[in-house]
Length: 280
Image 1 (cartoon, rainbow, N blue to C red):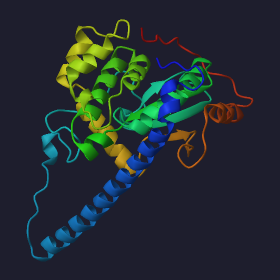
Image 2 (image 1 turned 90 degrees about the vertical axis):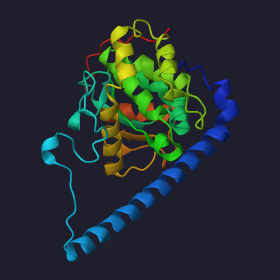
Image 3 (image 1 turned 45 degrees about the vertical axis):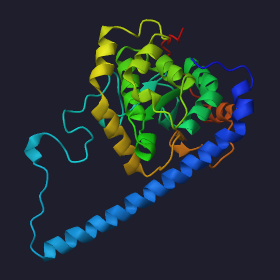
């Protein structure tokens, strides 16, 4: 679990570079979204011309059991244990009946996501542990798409495998504590992901190892990323409090986040909390 003792040495020295990384990432995401819109328009023109010319366009066989663009044509979508939300694409952390919900769209290779986690993790965990907040994580693979590689996908699958073992939160934090440089696809190596799992007590067992090696939740991670694209957010991290976007356009701090949650929860009863084990 990430620890917070004031502002860490890494944050002091890297504050400027982290902000630059966030800006650079947002610019790449905007460019990616623009390319996607251009391809969509071009595709629409091709379809119209083909129809006018009487050309038959092949479509996926609906009886094959695989939807076009579903992410993994080799198998069905397997959601991790306890997944929630629309299409079971949410990994929930915290009390199910907490009065406020924080929605977080993240990519484990994303440097801006790492900056967010390093800054806000202690506050978020404190609010979760007091029953004031439920966090709903959506896993995204933007960096794989922008830079190539499989680190976002493989780390997302491994995190979903940790969810199967009831240890998503501590493993999630370990991944960010050990995030490589954005250009370094170290998370693409499953052996590295398994080595990091040893930092979470009881996680690196036979079922977790098989889940990581087999990519059990790969199709689910891809489907989660498709849902993110469809939602039109365009960059990570995207953070919503009770449905309102609160990160990026406002000067959010750990203190202001806590104040916002407490204001939203005024007069409401905290949720029932289940203890969460942390990393070693």
